[in-house]
Image 1 (tube, rainbow, N blue to C red):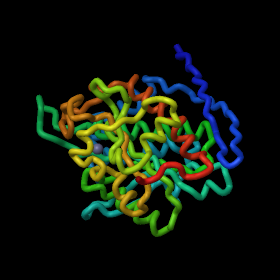
Image 2: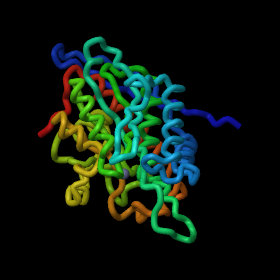
Image 3: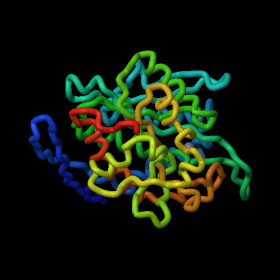
Image 4: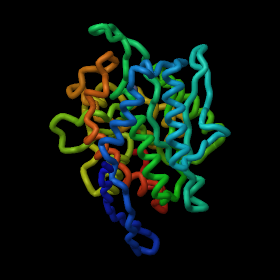
Length: 317
Ligand SMILES: [Zn+2]
């Protein structure tokens, strides 16, 4: 039986400061079902994909799946193909880069990057005969967020600024994919407004008033703006993230270095809620699909607002 797909009506205020007038635009966001998240996660973190190691057949299968999802939802390749190929210490690999052009002639020249790393470590220390490090939370979860956001935003087609959806390669080898792409985009001299990266969002935070935290919290007003745009306490500050310098440890960092604009990672891994980091038991069975769906949907209105404000309101402190 087909499940009923709920439609969430979200009102977003678009305020034009110059004229101090405001117009309310209603945007229909199709509610993401936990089953949709489960289906994508079950594929990306399956044993068949062998832990998505750089250069592996499993990573190739993951990329083919992402490309099919992009194509089916009207996300175009940003380069000649979806692949941005690069060398990872002697192994040829790639980022998958999808493109949703902005609807406003002028603002379409400004870019927002939504990213997550698709690769993982392949294998890990054996537990009960299992050696495949499936990387469900790290980072099939973030990849699923980017794929789902691409579908959502492509269906809405209300983004005035352009959006790149990037599944990075070779993050686990030292952020090699993001370093490569940040360099290429800097050479092309694109006007990057901001980058939002997704890492380990498969399990809710323990006892927090906010839904997720952002790395580099104090570096910009991004968390405050996202909360303002979403009208809820979506993003908070996790002291441990600062203590462990997570801001510098994911794919947001090379973009921050190249462009000196707000580039930060949204995560829900809080060092207490998940014991399988880089462990063969980082499996789909440990994930909370309802939570993931709700977090992803909660991000949509903010991302739209980021892409539609008259000026760049998110700034470095
Ligand atoms: Zn990761």
